[in-house]
Length: 425
Image 1: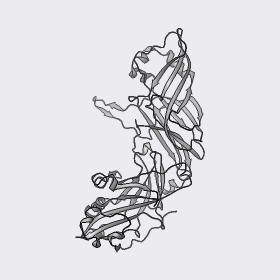
Image 2 (image 1 turned 45 degrees about the vertical axis):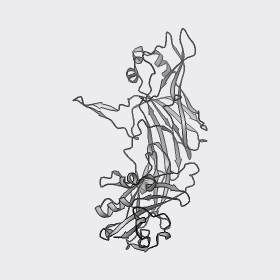
Image 3 (image 1 turned 30 degrees about the vertical axis):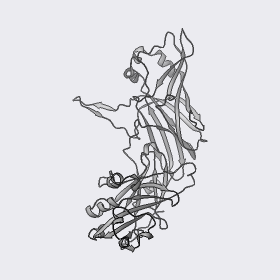
């Protein structure tokens, strides 16, 4: 499966008329010169090395939506999404009344969308959090600093389950996952001191929140995208007291309640773990949910430094292919591309992406050609003129909010290519 290391050959320079180009190459001043003088430098015969890397340092704290579920497929293995969430009281000094008795306690989670097969059954477990999601800390000098939580963060939880339920359902616009929590938890709220409900600071000390997770399943599966800020997402405490029956008190997940998706991936049943050690492979893996990136190492462009070429366009073409599971697990409509610096950090291709604009930069999937294409002329100029890094990272934008994935082809018959359109000064 591993790609054989090609012997670096000399650059093939193909002189071509402007009209013979497959795409519209009139970028960066090429429309101002004699089109017959344009030269295409093709890197189709030179190896562009492909390697895969696990994403890191991605924060899923307080994102617009959250994910809950579990999926498994042959190529990408097992992916689980769990949720840590705080809750808030809507008013201060809550009073439940004399002799309050719990009838039930329902956790509701509003479904916004889904990824996968909704015919799959999820085994959902709920636990009480024993640790707060504290987003700031104060040192011994009284200086306050912000704490960053990443998608792999864990918090201490109570091992006693508050609920274990199975869920299967086709989401509609008003669908919620409803989970009955234990009456012991409900009654503990009613029996607690009123001081715990004076305000949300006191309530958070009393009740840290919930951890909602799913057990491992077989092939297929589904990830539900949840809108926790929707009014339907809440804990509803149903109770009665000495005065009234059928009382309800709602604990909300509002904008002041911290929450995060805890993403986890298990690649042990796939080829991925072995491929992570390789510098050059013939398949690239892109996976959302803080999963996988693909790195590209371009061939050396040093020979062009003193060539007096003016680069008008640099087109990076990345083939992808469909797998048998794509009918359930969709591929991304768009990929991101960034430079990888000497410290392994990503740097945006600002001049191509922002100065030239998103439509020029591209990165969209072309279903007809089955390729993702990027235009990176300014980046290539920087590599040639300044010796800038020739390593690039392909990734899924807003990965913590998008579980889509795709396989990229870099084999001998269908490989990643770089074409430069240049003219001589």
